[in-house]
Amino acid sequence: MAESKIEILTAFLKAFGKQDIESAMSYVAPDCEWHYHVGTRPVTGHENVRKVLTKLGGHQLDSRWHTIRWAETGDTLMIEAVEDYLNPEDHRA
Image (cartoon, rainbow, N blue to C red; front, side):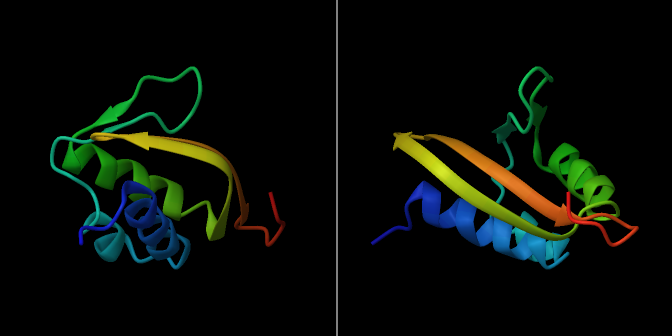
């Protein structure tokens, strides 16, 4: 049985939280569209997602996601979540 989208996202976030960009990218579809922040344009495509993750990874250490609610249908997954992480000054944000 194929993994659900939420299971794939959870694995992706766990890898990103460990700063393992390569493992995180193994869960990203080449044609993905990632709406990572309300009010900003989505990130599209494999290489653009890698660029954003690499940039964020330098500032978001020990990233932890807390999913509040989610829904998936077909190829779409929507989540409401809160992320907390350590910044480079070792403060949790």
